[in-house]
Amino acid sequence: MADDQQVIVAGAGPTGLLNALGLARQGVRVTVVERFPEIPSAPRAPLYHWSVLEGLERLGVLEDALAAGFTKQDYEYRVRETGEIVAYGLQCLEGHVKYPFNLHLGQHRLAEIALQHLERYDNARVLFGHKVTGVSQDDGGVDVTVWSDAGEHTLHAQWLIGADGAQSAVRKALPVEFDGMTWPERFVATNLRFPDNREGWSQTTFYLDGPRGAIIVKIDNSGEHGLWRYTWMEDAALPEETVGERLPGMLAHVFGEDVAARCEIVATAPYRMHQRAASSFRADRVLLAGDAAHITNPSGGLGLTMGLFDSYVLNEAIGAVIAGDADESILDQYAELRRAAFLDKASPRAVANKTLIFHSDDPSERDRNLEVFRRMGSDPDLAREVLSFTKTLETPSLIGAW
Image (cartoon, rainbow, N blue to C red; front, side):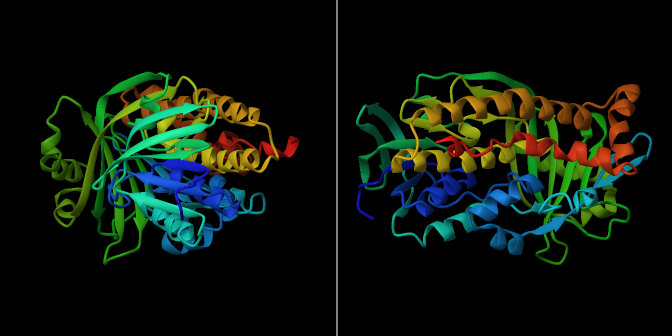
């Protein structure tokens, strides 16, 4: 494709690539720039809530995503102090929603699938190894300066989507703040080969044990034992470079020495946790989406959920503006509605999830917080109400009124 793109997307994660795919499917000429030489495979979000699956279907990638991952309905909270197991599932959604299950799949795998679909369009291209170093704009469009092995050059487009993560170079080039707070702890996302025959353990377990709590999720069925994500929390003052030395002790504490000795550590990704949102998700011709716009601790899988919901509504809105089917003010609606969804709903819920899983030291408070999950097992109406929360994070299509 010639250098005449109408939209530039910074970032080749799921949020960026799905935005680009949606635009390409509308006939928009789009270029994705990504600073890494390929899609990063570091451990990241492994869960796609039932509520985002119809959006993946609209973009044409759901069938491949389902084939690459696996679906499930069962979840549990396990309390170490008391031995209690609180189990619940998504069976109550059957007959009420199109996809009554969640999808488990590594985040990089969804990005790879989106890339495969995007590469089928002549009006789209992806430039790996291109780092954004500058952004400028005027009434005629936006210029994005990028650096690659070939040197520095500038790309021009009508619109720019910043979907380049929490350290977004696009956002940092804008007159916006990244308001919020940073948690004092460090999270460590670890990919493991786990023995699957751990009797009584669900394929998704929220392990409540105060500071030794963990989120334990099966990602795929590859290999003899399958690939699991073990996410734990530790004091950020501990040396990051020795995370791997502390992990066997954590696994032994949870599963016992025998199981820990049989775990194969595939990858670890330590990172700081934040609750932050950009002061605006739009700066004239630049729109922010995903972690570039908002970032949350990962408890409950709401970060990627929000990024996907951003993508579904944003690519459609920009496409409509370019086609002349909507006024630019539709992009202000995107910015306002998505920011409110994060601040008013997603972020508070993620904080509550983190508190329950990793700070459950008060037995009385923990017991109160678990009661709703106990009731879900025998009350399908309540279960549907609770499980419908993630659907409230979605912004309906904005182009219907135009």
